[in-house]
Amino acid sequence: DAGITQSPRYKITETGRQVTLMCHQTWSHSYMFWYRQDLGHGLRLIYYSAAADITDKGEVPDGYVVSRSKTENFPLTLESATRSQTSVYFCASSKGRGLEAFFGQGTRLTVV
Amino acid sequence: ELKVEQNPLFLSMQEGKNYTIYCNYSTTSDRLYWYRQDPGKSLESLFVLLSNGAVKQEGRLMASLDTKARLSTLHITAAVHDLSATYFCAVEESVGTYKYIFGTGTRLKVLA
Image (tube, rainbow over the protein chains, first blue to last red):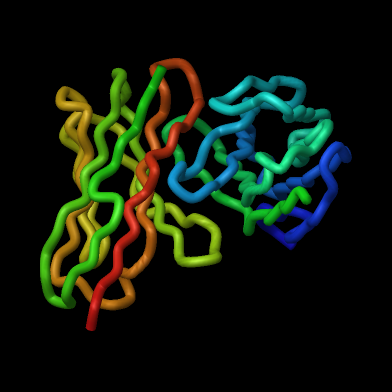
C-alpha cells in the first residue's frame, strides 16, 4: 500500500523490555520524524532524519534509539521501556524543507 | 531553543461564529505549518506558510504568518460542527534545519 504505515498499531509491554516500533513509507521521502503525543504536551519530537544514515536528536530523545539504513524505513526502539514512555507515537515523512509532513496512523504503546 | 505556544488551548464556540487561534514562537523562523487532528486519528496538513505575510485559505479556515512578530493565526469563519478537531501549528527550527516543533494544540468544539 502506498503511503506511510506504522506497526504495530497497539502494543502492551512490560517495564524493562525492549520494543521496536516500525515506520515504513513508500514515497522515498528524504525526511522522517518520530513524535510522541501526550495529553498536555502536544507532539514532541523524539528523533528525525534527513536521509539514510543521517539521524538527529529531537526534544525528548532519552531512552530511544533510531536507525535508518534504508530511505523507506525508520524504526524507533525503546531500549528498556519505562512507564513514562506510555504514549501514542507518530511517524511522519516529508519530501523536503518547506513541504508538509505526512503522518502515519500512530502506535499506541502501553508500558505496564 | 524553539518554543511554540498556542492559545487558547480549548475553544468552545457556537456554529456560525468567528474565532481566531494564535500560534506564537520564540525564535526566528519563516516556515510554519498548520495541522488538524480528529479524535483518535492521525494528523493531516492544512496549510504551509513559507514567508512573512503569507496567507492561505481553504473553506472556512484562513491562516496567516507574521515572521517579525513570530505569530501565526488560524481564523475560523462561520464555524460549523465539522470543524471540531484539535489544531496544531508547527514551526521549523531555524534556517538550515528540518526540525519541526509543534505547539500544544487547540482543541476546538463547535456546538450546533
